[in-house]
Amino acid sequence: MPRPSKGARLWLRPARRRKDGTVSHAPTWIIIDANVQHPTGCGAEDRGRAERALAAYIAGKYEAPRRDRDLSVVPIPDVIAIYLRDCADRQANKKKLAERARRLLLWWGDKKLSDVSMLTCRAYVDHRKAEYLRRYYEAESRRTRPPKPDGGAAGARRDLEDLRAAIQHHAKEQLHKGEVRVHLPERGVARERWLTRSEAAALLWACWRTREKQKRSHKGLPGEAIPTAKYTMRHLARFILIGLYTGTRAGAIASASWAAASGRSYIDLERGVFYRLAQGARATKKRQPPAPIPARLLAHMRRWKEMGISKEYPVEYRGQPIKSVKVAMARAVDLAGLEPGVTPHTLRHTAVTWLMQSGVTIWDAASFVGMSAALVERTYGHHHPDYMARAAHALSIGANKTPIKPVNRTRTEPRGTA
Image 1 (cartoon, rainbow, N blue to C red):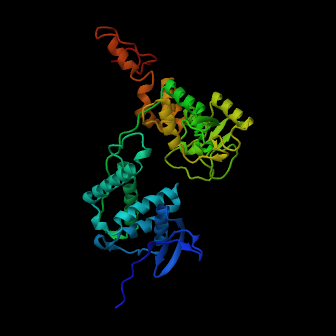
Image 2: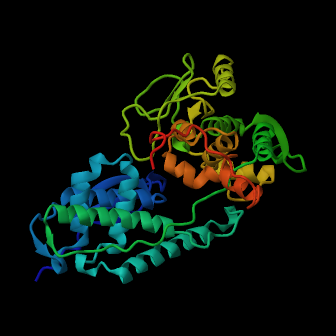
Image 3: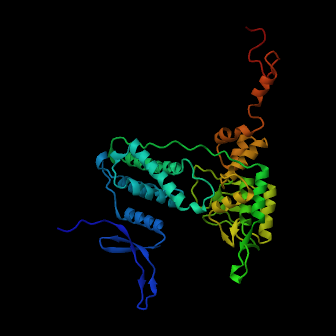
């Protein structure tokens, strides 16, 4: 009797050597399916990308059945596969969608729709929390702050939102019988950290003056590392200025360029407008409307380009566009002596907070940074100088004082009528 097939799986093919013992082919991850090898192009150290390649291979190979079935016989991988096949093209970030689908498949891969319950959803959240702690302690030497008390829960909630969307799409297509509820963990506490003017100045100064340090050991000279003439964090100073002056999301700042190009946001220095939505990108709930560039920042930007400080992109490092500044920002926060918790997104919070403190109307502030007026009022409204000012004034004049007379009050009835 033939052995059952193991299905598609990953195999780390060992290094291949020549007759003289030198390595001709480095170890690579291979997908094996029915004794046929499919290369992934991933080295031994890139297991994560190899797993994503395996998930994509399985999704492309397997066509989930589309027929009305009972919950107890519908595998969750079928539900996710149908959702990816039908709805992935509508997603703004397909790469992140694929990563979340991979995590869901690794944990929910052997379960049916009938297994989705409050207990299994909580178990998945606990699994993500354990994964967060494992990654944290593996990189403990690079950490400068303790682990988050609820680390991993936010990521688990986002994954489960995708699972809920997949199940709802499956039900909308009438492919299963019965109701399935995905239980989500509570949302985390909203971040309210923002920078004062002095904190922002300290952060900018730390980025501007930091120089690369090198040891003289390669010359046989003793002593500690000495600073060189290379300023390695000035690109972050430009990033911070753009974030503080425009309240733009980190991704749009990183993708900005001086010239309009597909897949990039665009800064028009002639008209002074920042087109934050990348060309060709789909507009999402995270609004990115065009915004006028403040005069002070616009002067900086024009100088950066004229002097060749930023040749093609406002924020570039060694002539190349940046992808993320999370590590550099954490380093700058440490150098500036600020408390941990300041991230690139803190710049957006700071911009809105400063607008409110300056007395800008909620509508103007929301339109400028790309938020809803309700969100600005709910999260940042208490920074406005007119916040509850009339209520405070009413209490301050005392109970026996004459209240403020209403103005512009018109009579609705003719004189002499009851």
